Amino acid sequence: MSTTLEQRALKRSIMMTLLVSSLGIAFGLMAGSRSILFDGVFSTIDAAMSALALVVTRLIAREVSQRFQHGYWHLEPLAAALNGAILLLLCFYAFLNAVQGLMSGGHELAFGVAIIYAVIVASACFTMFAYQRRLNRDADSEFVRIDMQGWLLAALITGALLVAFAIALILQQTRYAAFTPYVDSLLLAILTLAFLPVPLGIVRRAMKEVFLIAPSAVDREVHAAMAPVMEQDGLLEYSSHVAKAGRGHFIEIHIVTRTDFAAGRGVAELDEIRAAIAAGLCIPAEHRWFTVSFTADPAWT
Image: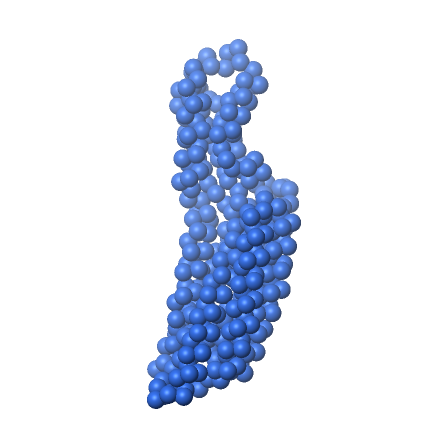
């Protein structure tokens, strides 16, 4: 993965997000729209979280330090969990705001201004999604992938706002005009419910890594790599432990051997076994903390 590409994508995303959020807040105030204001505030928080992600990617690119001897991989899921938690709270607050608006009879909205906003922002969001999707083919970054999904969701939702505002503008000229004050609060409620799966998914994935829950795919891969190795004479059994923190994978394998296994064997032969196991793993060497130990005493496994 190219850290340079990742950081470039995040920097441009931050600048564009700040622009979109400024438009959302400005147009939301001009149109008197809570749904557009929510969109703008959501984008502002998203920009802050993208800035945090950028800081984390720069730390991850560093070498290990005396204080962080396993590197900075663990910061990635922590940053993602914080991002998701803040967005969840925002969605919850906005939904309550929408319900309150519906119960109080709604409010008037300048639909013409709202439509102009929706056209501009939907175009910007679709453009950013296409740009990040193309760039992430080379960068292969989880941060960029999350950001890319956010741009797509924002584009689809803003597109839905555009359709809804256009319909409401038409309804103002019909006998259903009395329902148009409810449009903004209803859209806000729908917006928050549509946004909800994104932070929920981010938090769920991040907390799996924070709690070091073993990723099943990596665990299966380790067992598959060990199967041919354990056919060698003198190797009795093994235990393995895997965990994932951001892009970092921690893999420990302890192999129990016969007591006479090491007799006549040098370190080079043991390293050949390690190399055979590593060859069966698809995780790049720079993204894994890989340990293989040999012992004749099962108590050490």
